[in-house]
Length: 94
Image (tube, rainbow, N blue to C red; front, side, top):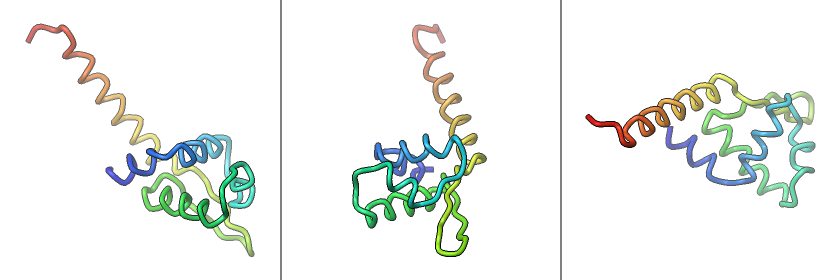
């Protein structure tokens, strides 16, 4: 799970995930949205992929990325659980 949090630490990677919420996109289409070098974007994609947050599919000479919904849902469930736990300890007598 630490890979996921490390992947989410960078604003470009978080924005890639936001863009992929609307559906799959090619690496080129994603890279065009950012003012960074293509090798830098490739490293961002690799980090997200290693964390399991995105999946890729190669078609000819294009790579299409999509959000890995199951991991995203698992992360959301974890975050909600953490918020519940920390929220219930505020001012609650034990």
